[in-house]
Length: 223
Image 1 (tube, rainbow, N blue to C red):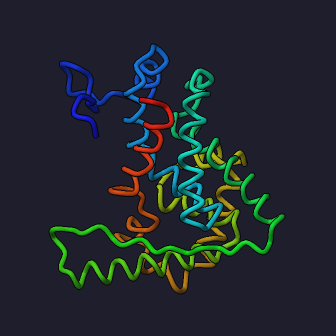
Image 2 (tube, helix red, strand yellow):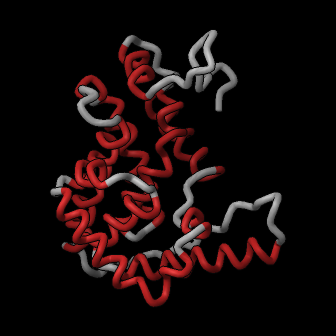
């Protein structure tokens, strides 16, 4: 992160809100947009990948979404959270790509496993076990029907509430509850016992991967 950018307001310990950052960007300060990218990269990636099941294509959609959101920023009315508004843009783009992909059924899906981030308080054996479990979770989640997979990712992995998940996906709160129940039921026997600490390691999008998207968005928007 640029040393000149701060997550807190000048002279205060209070974290600057997404809405305040948006206001700064709309006022002509382009650089603070990087803070939004850092904050919401992982959430956006997880939502998009839940649609596409392809790391490489999901990264491309994430980058495209950030550029699109920047140019549409004046349309953000703060009636919902910025992250909700952003994820809706990303999910719509991902669904569009999925429709295109289905029209070209000969395309090969590429599965990439992410390595777990190292932890200072875990042994190498613990890290290896967590990474293996995360990959198992990813494989099983990928096997769910798309409409179940998307809800499970947002509710259980990103821990969004029912209302925000419904807003992100453009469905009713009741549909979110029904789909989540069915998704959990399908995973219950093999995964429920493991939906604890390891779930946070699934579909990670930080470190070098986050830096790569930030660099691309910065270059594209001349931030």
